[in-house]
Length: 132
Image 1 (cartoon, one colour):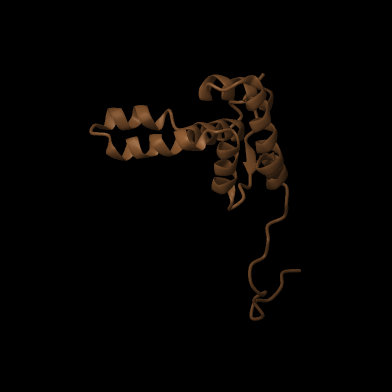
Image 2 (cartoon, one colour; image 1 turned 120 degrees about the vertical axis):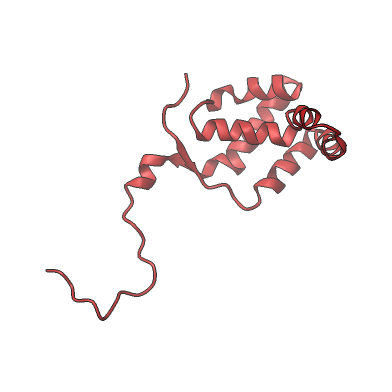
């Protein structure tokens, strides 16, 4: 079942480093770096696109985006990671847990963010009369 709500995810500034550390932990960083080098040396746009679709960090980013837009459920992460990255189920579950703990903890349904009152920026205009 796919979630209908778009989530507002506040990706930490360190998201790239977090994903890099996860890839390193699960021995996927070397593959990631090799594919990036191949991408830069690709002769055709088709070849570049093919390589881009195989880069582990890009696959993880797309899974996170799918979660954000409600096309991917959190429960499906291990299966998608296992098939997409061609890794054991245990590793896929471990990556999922790390993504939850370090990145997805910052997500919430959009409607929560929309119900917050707007933040006032700066000081109030002292020259404007209040409407009462």
